[in-house]
Structure formats: C-alpha cells, structure tokens
Image (cartoon, rainbow, N blue to C red; front, side, top):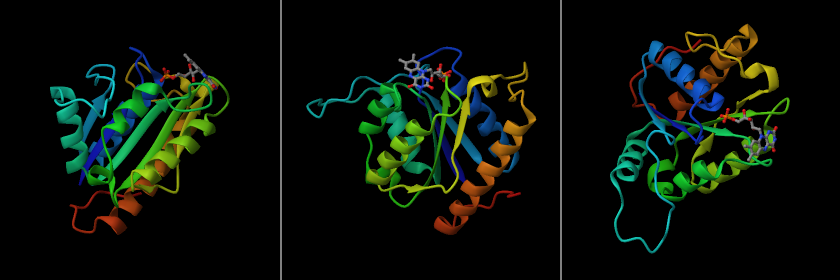
Length: 185
Ligand SMILES: Cc1cc2nc3c(=O)[nH]c(=O)nc-3n(C[C@H](O)[C@H](O)[C@H](O)COP(=O)(O)O)c2cc1C
C-alpha cells in the first residue's frame, strides 16, 4: 500500500512534522510504502490558476499524491484553522488525486487540542472528494514533546497514534482492496 504524508508547516522544528515523521515510521513498520512530502523542505509556489508552468516540487507532489492509496495531512493550528502553506499545496490538487482515497488529518496546536484546524481540514478533504478517516489526531500543549529518537514523549500519545493508524488502515482496506496488505492492530 502506497501512503503519502504531507507536512503542512513552514517551520524547521515543527511538531506537526515530527508527528508526521513518527507516523511515517510506524506505517513503514506495518509494511506500507511511505513517502513524506515536507512543505518546509520542498516548498511549492503560491498557486495561481493563470500559471502556465509548474515547478519540480509541485509536479512531484501532485504525482506522488496521485499514486497514493491513502493520504495523511498534518497542519499546525493557525488562528483556528489550517496553515496557509498546506491550503496552498492542496489548491494544486483535486479529485484526480484524492477521489475515493482514505485521508487522515492531524494537527498540532498551542492550546489543549486543535480541533478547529481538523474540522476545516476535513471539510477541504470532502471537497477534494477524499474520504475522511473516522479518527483524527491533534497534539496540543504539553503533548507536543518528542524524545531524541523522534517518538512522542507521552506514552498516551504513542498509543493514540497506533489507534489512529489502525483506523486509517481499516478504511484503506475497505476502499482500496487491491492495495497490498499492511499489518493492522
Ligand atoms: C500564526 C499563528 C497562529 C496560531 N494560532 C493558534 C490558534 O488559533 N490556536 C492554538 O491553539 N494555537 C495557535 N498557534 C500556536 C500553534 O498552533 C502551535 O505553536 C503549534 O505547535 C504549531 O505547530 P508546529 O509546531 O507544527 O509549527 C498559532 C501559531 C501561529 C504562529
């Protein structure tokens, strides 16, 4: 199963990106073929419907998402919504890349939990014709600490990551029965 993860922060040490990298490793251990697109490391230009050419980062992103069986989107919570960086990247895509695919939304917030960004992100996923995973995950406040090996410091967060990934993969099995199997649970 091909799974693409898109990190929607423009910050070097972003906790949303750390969470996504940890999830990517967890998915690899379950047998998935994982690709991570970090919009800080491989930025895409401001979307314009008038643009006649696309750049290499954008082309790679759109192609990778198009080839994926499942998608994970991560955003920092900014002013009760998703980052402009992630929204801009998603504006390059549509049903050709997302239709019928399971999509997991995750966020990181300064407050206790970043539900506003997740709600907004799920509305965008629905308009991209993706299928929202029934679980989501938000790291807030003190839950945003990571150990030197990249794993969340809080054991409860690590357990929640596994549960959230189980939920995504169960949905992926239903929606993409021809994709190669991964370990669930
Ligand atoms: C422009 C901006 C707006 C923010 N708005 C919110 C907000 O509405 N609610 C909140 O809980 N935290 C807010 N924060 C704090 C971030 O959500 C928090 O620092 C989060 O960990 C950032 O994610 P990152 O570590 O992936 O960059 C804001 C931060 C910035 C820079």
